[in-house]
Amino acid sequence: MVVLNRIYTRTGDDGTTALGSGERRPKYDLRVAAYGTVDETNAAIGVVRLHLADSPEVDAMLGRIQNDLFDLGADLAVPEREGKTERLRMLASQVERLERDIDSLNDQLAPLTSFVLPGGTPASAYLHLARTICRRAERMMVELAARPDETVNAAGIQYMNRLSDFLFVASRFQNNNGAGDVLWVPGQNR
Image (cartoon, rainbow, N blue to C red; front, side, top):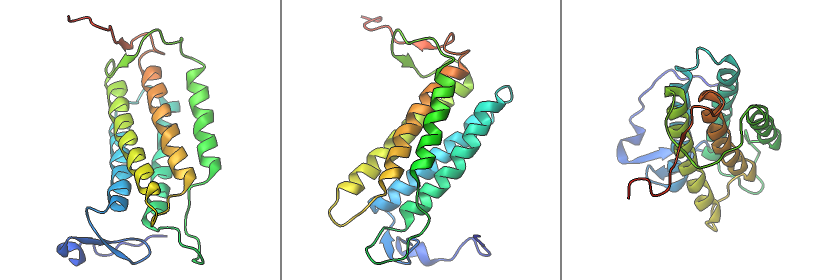
């Protein structure tokens, strides 16, 4: 259990922040940026949920995802090191659950005939926004994992990859099962 008695500590006033391991890093460090962008994805999903009064199934899925994203932030905040005790890590089972949720929603959608522009219902537009933030977090995690002195849990990268797919499918689901999708018309304004 996490207990936060003081919100400000002044320890970050020098431009550094502590990882879960206690190691201090600059606030612009790629690991810090990656878990910060995961947090940004979570906040965008919180905005989506404000627009889901008529969609309890998707709201419940997003509630589970928000909790998973905190798990992922905790995973990223404690770099894996050989010989160190393991902390909270993302699991393949979380990726698999997300895949089941994608399939459940996608089974109700008509096949796509074009790329989809962000829009339609407010929930759909916000789901697209969350999707683009999620993709940015994934790119940062992949870049971090490519560094020779860093490690990133593969299940975390897979989760973010599936999450962007989930957010896309959920956006179509929120657009009247795809009937309200705003479709791209190539060259329309030439």
